Image 1 (cartoon, rainbow, N blue to C red):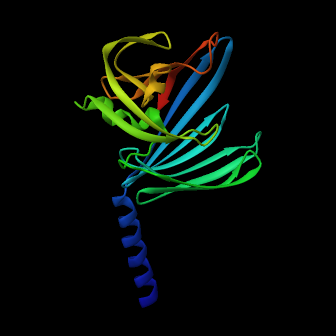
Image 2 (image 1 turned 90 degrees about the vertical axis):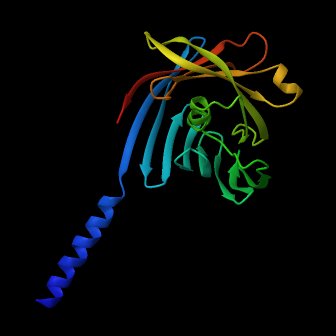
Length: 223
């Protein structure tokens, strides 16, 4: 009897402690339009205490991001079965260690985060900056197509109405590009809905002259 009572008490305390940590999930469905090609995209954001897990699926591969509440990266798992890529990147202080397989070859690389900001899911990680009064925001990203480590800069490009899946939305517009002289030749735009700073649209050219514009836009969201 005493053992049963202790077990019931333990279970009650355990369930109470679980209830103190709120776990929530949000699903965001997008589409990518590049010329005549239309591809679905998906982000699932799960928040558990002080951490978030983002599962992202696109035509290029599947990423799972492990971040804090502000979407600063702690770890990243990338899989692209078609080109033989399956690797992990983990943050350890100011270092990022990437190991696994890239394009069917073993990979082991180390990067340095000079200013503390390592982003991979830019659409989410830049939302806090979009809501801030900061004029510019510098961060680092590992490009999944070639694992090049890039320093990038985001700047405010005003507020405006933008079309999102047939609706008109008032949004904050960001310009994002690489730092240095290369930034004069390429840039991208991100739009964040002013009411809640959710990412709703993206535009950029992903190629040389003659390449059609690539657009990402939010189709629907669930929570």
